[in-house]
Length: 238
Length: 179
Image (cartoon, rainbow over all chains, first blue to last red; front, top):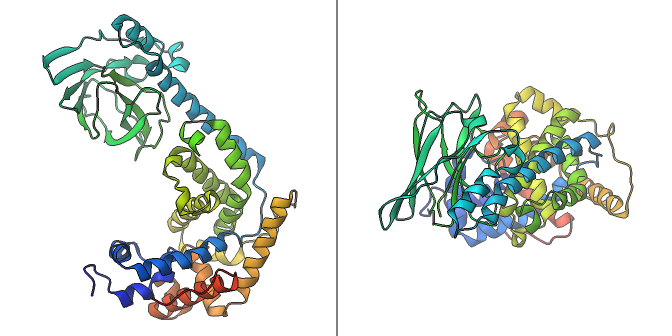
C-alpha cells in the first residue's frame, strides 16, 4: 500500500477509467496522489490519453452554425473592450502628479464614463505609519449608488472596507481584482456580497504593492477569470 | 495564445476558426442535439478566452486542450441531465443531419482521421467499445456503466483499460506497457 489510499494494483486497474473521466469524483484525490508518486501509473495514464485524444477526432465532422460564431465573438469583443477600458487609465497614469492621476480616473472606464456619473472621492492618502496607508475608493455611481469605502494597506496586505453597497443581484457576486499597469486585471478568490445594511469587508488574498490598483466588479456567482463588467469600485494604491 | 492572454479578440477569432468544427463535432456527438452542442461549444470557447493563460504547450496541442475543455463541459452538462436522456443521446445521435462538407484539405484530412479512428473503434471487441463509448461520449461513471451493461465494476474498468490500449496500438502509437 502506498502512502495514499490507492495501492499500485488498484491504481493500475483504474487507469483506463481515469483516462476516460469515468472514475468517481470521491476516488480522484487518492488516485491522483498515487499518480504523483508512481511513474509506472503516470506513464500508463499518459499513454492511454493518446487514445482518448484520438476519440475526440472520431466524432463525425459537423459544421458549426454561423450564428454561434457571431454570439461568441460578440461576447469576446465586449469583454476585450472592458479589459481595454480597465487597462487604459492605469497605463496612462502619471505617478508624479496627483491631479493628473485623478483626471485619468475620471476617464475610466472609457466606454462607460460618458453615460455614467462617476463620483470621485478625494484621493487623499492618509499615512498612519511608514508601511500603512488608506486609499478611498473611486465609485461608479451608476452601478454602486451611494457606496463609499476604502482599501487599507499594511505591509503588503490589503483590506477592502465598503458601506452602502447595493446587493449584486440574483446569481451574481462581487469579485476583487488586482491590476498592475500594462497588464490585464488578475482575478482573486475574494468574492463577496454585502450584509443587509450594505456593509462589507474582505481581505485581498494576494500581495498588493504600491503600483497596483484594487478593482471590484459584479460577476456571475462563482466569479470569473476575466472581468465581464466594468469595475464599480477602484482604488489606485500608488 | 500570448495574444489571447493579452485580450486580443482577433487572435481569438483565428483560434475559433481553426478549431470550431472539431469542437462542435465533439459537442454534438456527446450531446446529441444541436442546441445543446451549441451551448457546450460556446461555453468551451468562452472558457478558453477567459483562461488562455493556463494553456501549456508542453502538455499537448492547442487542439487537444480545446477538445479537452469541450469534453469536460459536455460531461458537466450530461451529468445534469437524466440518465434516460443521456442514454438515448448516446445511442440515437443522428450525425448525418448537420454533417460538414469537405471544404479544405485540412478539413478533408480531419475527416479521414475521423474515419480511421472510427474504424479502429469498430475493430475493438464489442464489450470494450461499448464501455469506452458510454464513458467518453456518454459521460457515465464506471459504476453507472457497470449497471447498464450488467457487469461488475472491476470488469468494466478492465474493459476500458484494455480497449484504450488496443485503440492506441491500432492507431500506431505503440504498445502500452503494463505497470
